[in-house]
Amino acid sequence: MMSGSPGSRWTVLLPVKPFALGKSRLGSWAGAARRDIARAIFLDTMDAILHTPEVCRLIVVTADPEAHALAAGAGAEGIHEASVGGLNAAARLGAAAAAAAAAGHGAGVRTDPVAVVAADLPALKPRELASVLAEAGPHPRAVLADHRGHGSTVLTAQDPSFLLPGFEGASRARHAANGAYEIAHSGVPGARLDVDVPGDLALAAALGLGTHTAAVQANLPQ
Ligand SMILES: Nc1nc2c(ncn2[C@@H]2O[C@H](COP(=O)(O)OP(=O)(O)OP(=O)(O)O)[C@@H](O)[C@H]2O)c(=O)[nH]1
Ligand SMILES: C=C(OP(=O)(O)O)C(=O)O
Image (cartoon, rainbow, N blue to C red):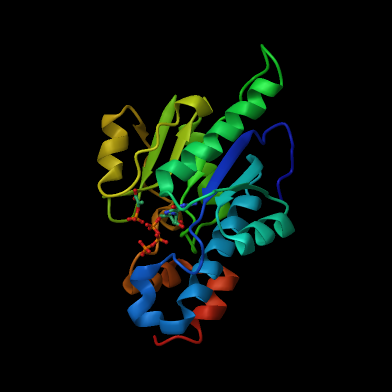
């Protein structure tokens, strides 16, 4: 749980859409439970990040008061998003806060690297995130492709001022074209498995869901 040890140096930005709006593509299958699924997936993603020793700071960026309360209860920080302006705008808000914190420490103080992590990774394991961050570390910017190879689930930057988020659509190619090093895909399936459609949840279940998502999923049509 965010040890603050000498090896823990990453700031993770975790943007999440209000639970009542997010994961709309699960709606026709999950019905009234869609909100519960969105919340559970966020909680499992956040738990995995908080149990990653290399992470010293977690900033949740959201317009949802419930997500803020859950983040605070878990020991994370929150940044309020005044309007739901998309993932890139939320990532930029978080990166600006991380950059401001670094500036506040004065000249010559090392800037901690930042990683934006998608909040829809219910099979993410701390050892996977640790491995992704270790590989990303030497590169100015780095990207992890999602399980389809089309989108991105993690984007990192050594300097938060140069995160340059280009999520949405074919974001893996966009991030790579914009200079981000492509992180190797082997051994981190949970870090790549963003849940967009019902079939993704079955794929995530095969990898091992976090406890919150597993509990909600048990009451849904299989
Ligand atoms: N803070 C914030 N997070 C966002 C926003 N849009 C998307 N996200 C988050 O970015 C991640 C990837 O987004 P999507 O896959 O589009 O997720 P989603 O919008 O919940 O799903 P759909 O409604 O099915 O498109 C998810 O963890 C979302 O919660 C936004 O406007 N603000
Ligand atoms: C926002 C993105 O993903 P999704 O496919 O989950 O919408 C993305 O991969 O850039």
